[in-house]
Picture 1 (cartoon, helix red, strand yellow):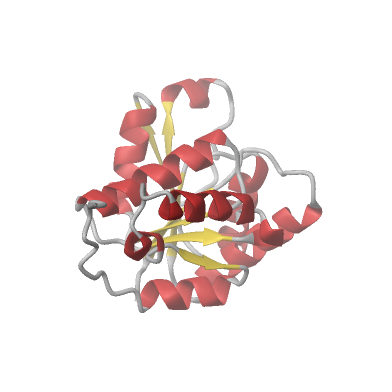
Picture 2 (tube, one colour):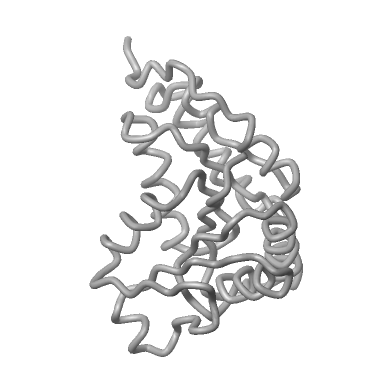
Length: 191
């Protein structure tokens, strides 16, 4: 079982209450399965929702946040452990170091950047940790369509595209993460 689950998600709530509801459900599921949430250390938006849900259900939460965001009063000081780092690069490196796997919930440009960085690192061979999209209300479908287009155009290998775990159900995501077996990714597209 993968114990340390890094979740990338928005520092906003989004425009549908269902995003909050599903963040609460994922947090509850992590706690009930005795998994630790590793996340960006914020107290706002879906970040705060999932952290609070894990804590309310008896789980542990480790947050990594840059000093600039602590000074902007967005740090969650009620979590199990809050690590303050100098910048975003250190934050992402520490999140990747602590995590056994990665899940992206709905979010904005930061969430996109974070999930693509860890997924690309898997493709290149820096790690073999599972990468998943929590597809709440089909949020990720436009991006999945684009990625399929990139496969069709010869820029992404189909075998690599298929490593991405996608589900609308937290239980299913965690089950797929636990059963993920890295295979020969044939890392480069060849003509």
